Amino acid sequence: MGQLITEWVNVTGDISIIARESGEVWFHTRKDTKEDVDPFAAPMTGASSSGSAVGLLDGAINLGFAGIEKRLARPEPTLAGYIVALVGAYHTSVHTPRNLRRAAKRFEELGRPEVAAYLELRAREETGHDRLALKDLRALGVPAEQLVANFMPEGIEPLCKRFDDLCAQDYPIGCIGYSYCLERIAALKQDSDIEKVQALCPDGIDATRFLRSHSSLGSEASHVAETIEFVASLPANDRISVVRETYQSALIMANGYNHELLKSETEMLAEMEQAIGEPLPHIAGSRPSQGEELDTRPAA
Image (cartoon, rainbow, N blue to C red; front, side, top):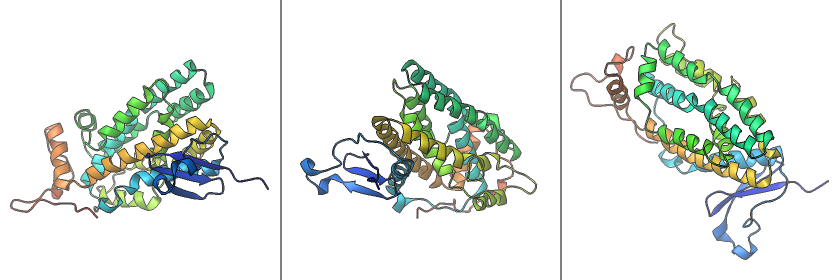
């Protein structure tokens, strides 16, 4: 039996993620070893496997979210919070096909048709997802186009900018890590998560199209599996870049989402209503009555 494939990527300057094709993953701190004897100080150059590739990618996401674990907000779900999430979903999806095609064109120019073909496929698969978010907002009686045109959640803006910047780079391989991060986290959503959101909606209204599509019930699981196989097929230097960007995107996503979750429902409503210049329907009961203290969402 041959030796198991082992891969590693330094992601923070001090911490490296190490993964074997058997599924083992661990984190190596460079300060615990001397640089001249550290076996993971030099970049990896060997082959990959689906088992070691997923270990690196998921390890990067876990490491990115670990930094906020102790201050992670865990509020009870509210309709206002879900509307904010739908607006964020619109903004993270509306430019995805265009961005991926831009990156694909660049890889064609660089003589990397296999990467270009992968990105073109992803662009086709992601086309129209922004319209799902708009349909859900309309189902809730929200002026969808007006809201998304005038409001972007503060925590989502850095994430959108990151993807724009990645796809505009001269060598935009990092966009694969960004996409993997978002799809992998979406694939964790289960039927019970969708049921909780549906329970927030007014009777007879289905506003979970985007959520269902971007969950374990949709195509995310297959997209994740396909991306793992594709990343495993890339040269070592590309895999390193993808894993590092997966980590950076996870950091941005974790802090951005937590920023939004820490807001009170009243703050969310105020931001959205200021953007459209009118009250939002169906959730008037969420507003505090006169003299009532504003709702706050404590961090865990």
